[in-house]
Length: 129
Image 1 (cartoon, one colour):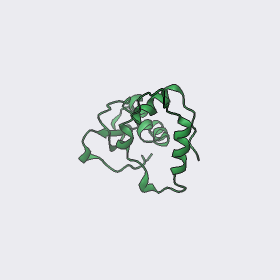
Image 2: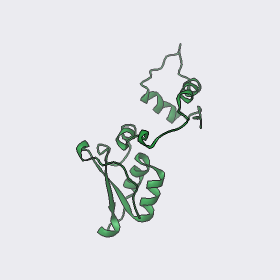
Image 3: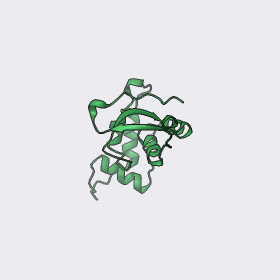
Image 4: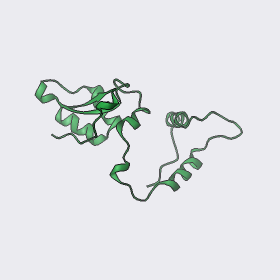
């Protein structure tokens, strides 16, 4: 499925930042050209081993709770501890993992656990509820 080339101004600014682009009035950056070329490079099939790790995504999602903790550590079942999953944790789960993980955590009162120590990182696995 091709990527839509029309971005709102906030997303456009973020994309320019990620691509490290500087404004040039003689050669303006056009998302339509960029995404047309990008779409040509997309594979027709993908493999599970090509899924990005949470820490790869985290460097572009610094507006999360504890942004220095980018390595996935596992899950915490708050039903066993008598706590309630925090909204900040749910939002970080959604931004760095997936909407599916977010929904499971919200429904099951599960917190995603994170660390800033790369050697403690775990391979991602779905929460069980």
